Length: 377
Image (cartoon, rainbow, N blue to C red; front, side, top):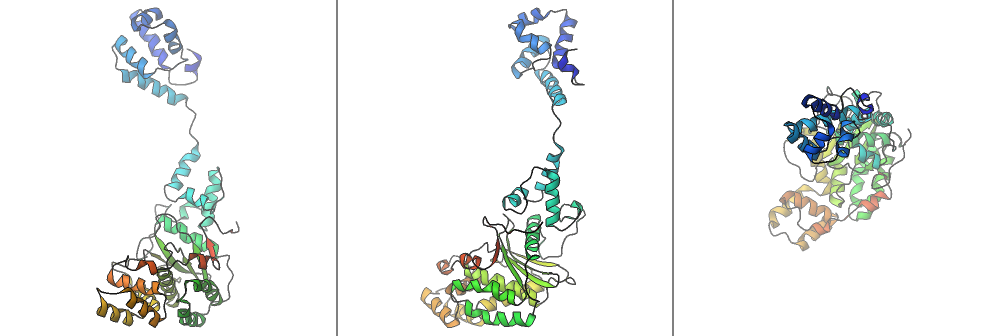
């Protein structure tokens, strides 16, 4: 047997060619004559130094009256038998990537760049604060589904625990509900000028609320979350919609959850993850209805919005809308946002919905947009 075949339990296809020649009483030069090629074209195949190409498989099939697929299967079986075994880490990386956007998480700076899959798994467990992959949400087949009003997806779990990871290192005074209620009552004075959102992180921190912004993962569709960490409330936002109306609505929605103590350990859902808050449809749990009502009333007194809508719709002019905003002492974009929700026309006067990210990011803890927050390992 030649050297190539001796390296594998599966014989090289050249062995089959040899056996066929012997069975038919042919010499190698006879086969070369039949195929119309030189002996030098056949010898490397017969000696196991060269594989059978598709063209040669078709030629052998005519010479031996055997299907070309048979020769190709012989070659495939031999090639697989001598191929180097695949790295076991491939399967482990595929398992992780099929559930979580590992590559995006590495790119975002959540994980250190590494080729060591064990290190990658360790970083994933650290993010989820567990010592076993089977306890990482969505990786275990018997993982319990949360009782959120929408099932939490792997993308949302990953984002949520990134918020937890960063929030756990933020230092704020003890939480004071009375201070938070007083702060919320005073916030409308900040709702006339987009630049005033820069005061929000400081105001909330003084009340004992850890506030941060973490860029959402692609397709996660998260707007905000609130939960309790060691008895201290946390509000995380994505600001994926860079608009003044969306910011104030989502913020007030999450603060209402905190005031109602939603998301504490004795609550059926340990965290209130809120998605797609621009379009509020379907049956919502009572706590979400209450939070939406509080957020809407905070953005603009709903009695005034309803009265304006009934009197003016469908002929709501820009001039009248700006006049309503001045009377309510709100930025026009906030009032426009409320009237858009009421009418269902989300492109109406959209030019007034000012951007706020740059003002907020100058004062808040922000993770994303090319600037990851450094956390202790």
